[in-house]
Length: 127
Image 1: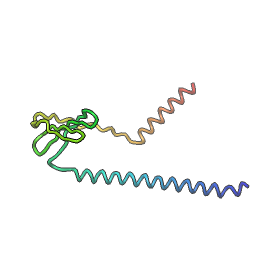
Image 2: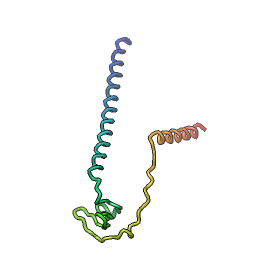
Image 3: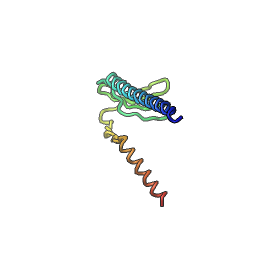
């Protein structure tokens, strides 16, 4: 009876590995597609004459934006169905914000933090 069960276990394990490999392949393909589409959109929208300098959310679906159009800076209001020019700013009125610091978190560093906090929790529970 035990010998007859071994091929079933091997077959189940093979099916499990196949499913995992297909999942990893689809996940990788999704990642690559997302990266490609993002870089494609970035090159398509990268112009020299228009640039959004700053955006401020007022309420859901309503924003104020400072937009550079050529050499002029314009404040626009964006609503659900309309865009309204509010005023024009001079270059001296614009305060360039410092580049935001992007946190450089890798999956490994987050995993290490989680492991260390779990170890601390286990050590506290053992006492």
